[in-house]
Amino acid sequence: MNAGSGDHAETDRPQYKLRLFITGSTPRSTRAIHNMRRICEENLHGLYDLEVIDVYESPEATRELQIVATPTLVKILPEPLRKIIGDLSDRERVLAGLNLAPLPPESPQNP
Image 1: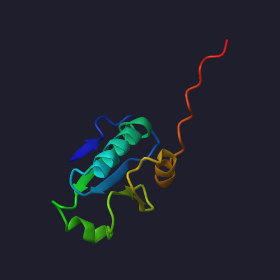
Image 2 (image 1 turned 180 degrees about the horizontal axis):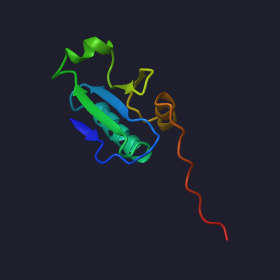
Image 3 (image 1 turned 135 degrees about the vertical axis):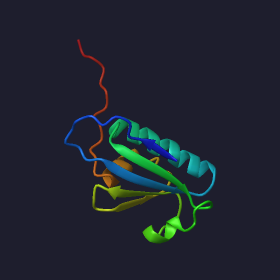
């Protein structure tokens, strides 16, 4: 499954190539997919390619990147390659692993 890059806005920000390794449709895998899609849309809109790989369906895909636990997110591009293990619910940890600064929280308008 691929998601993400549709139209590429002209920008100096790099294109992200991400692979998310999961095991079936477990609650943890489902949470990881949901969390990663949300993070990508909020922080990399139009600048990412997210490939979800079910290791039950493609066990050979784990060999090249030496995946030993799931869910595991692998940031292939931009370099350096990084791996983040878990359901990706710790947004700040994921953003740090992707080398992205978190968006500032929306503050209410002060009169």
